[in-house]
Length: 615
Image (cartoon, rainbow, N blue to C red; front, side, top):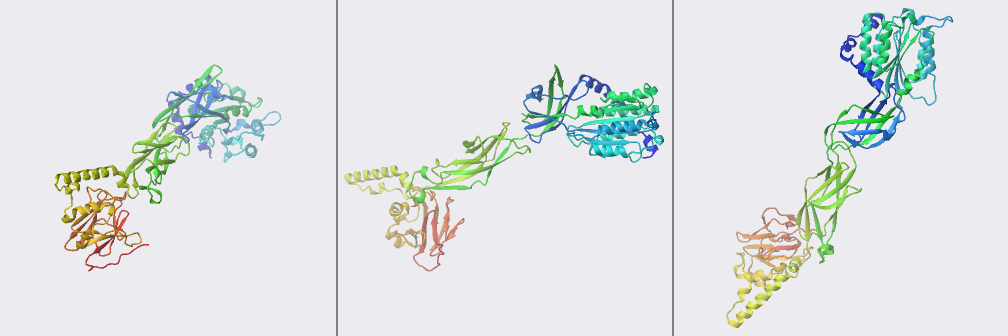
């Protein structure tokens, strides 16, 4: 670094003076009365928040030994509980700024220079100590290539010992102080570290430097850099305006000053640093439930005094948790074990396990208080303790096939919650064979008794009223066989042999292996409907897998028969393929209506097709 550069004061530093000179008085008043500051609010573990706290007494030193009961926290002007208080020792950033010149070369009667005495005092401080706090050490000088960033006290001692500055050739300049403040203001390696500069200098020589010194003093106060000053020179100059300006630098930044002519005892550097090595870390429970801007204030009571921090403004994004069902089933089939008749409560499965995932869109995972399962808007299951992600859906109350809407909700420790979108799940209840008959047994008995009564009236009156006891045929197919088809087709039982002989085609009931069962075939003429409801279907198939109107077979163009499904749940299947559109039946086709299996057969077997059976 050449002399011209050292003598050139940055213009930006000079421009700071009119902007921040008033900070002198604010800082001085704060130091005299004590103050509290909070810094580095950490919201990563929300709703548990952490913040740094420093409490300075009237001398500018940080108070030691604070207790939790002395701390009060206000979040958005509402008191919040303190969870923990930790006293830490992160060390300090100590910048030694040696502004050297001929005044340092003056020697005493023993031939020891002022510079040697200053270096000796610094080396004594830097002797390695057990359990010493690790400080961040820097050295700035106005000598050529004499700046260092040091990692230990021993390195500090070694660097000072290696210096051989040409004192008589150096000119003190406030550039050394400006560089020291810039280095001190760099980002700190540890949260809570304080910044301290020891400025060892001869007196400023010009009025321009005096003005620059005032601007640098304001800069140090604004950046909370504590500057201690050792004024080196003859005792006669310690009362000059230049010396007063250096003293003001120390006072206004919260530091101390000392004059050194070579005879005085230099201050202990450790006394500058030790009171600033401590800081406090507060942990408290936040109650914020809305996103946006918030404030935090901390008050400390100590020896009948209360230190209150300025409000710390911060922004926080808070959103309710979101819960999602993980791979919910599209449908659940309930049926009796082994296909035997049973009560609905004994059908299997009796319950369905459901899994959920809970996420926090604001990026702040927190404890859950409750998770809830809703079915059709009603609470079906809930968790008030871990595991939070598992529900058991009770299915024992469902006795018929229906679609249900499932939703889940998660409630966090702040009381925030949201309900998921509805997910449809169909519960299919398969009734055992004869289920329809049992359910409508009372109506059947009533109809039989009514029919017998009508027959007795007809006999007694001599009028033939037999046709009044039979239901009116709805379908236009088989007009001459209405009674036979309606009465004999219940539960899929075969029709009469006469109807079979005249029909161009018929259905033969077979088992799962494709073997015919001992049942009269169902004749097919015109249009024939199949289902479980006697009002809607000609051929009544009594099984829970059969829809009220399940399917129909229509005769067209002679012996061409088409089969179509009527939007049934179980579907209509031809040769093990579910049909979606009307399909032309071929000789030997296998037809599934729910659990009923039939083989389509033409009377005139002109079209032959071997069915494919899967066994």
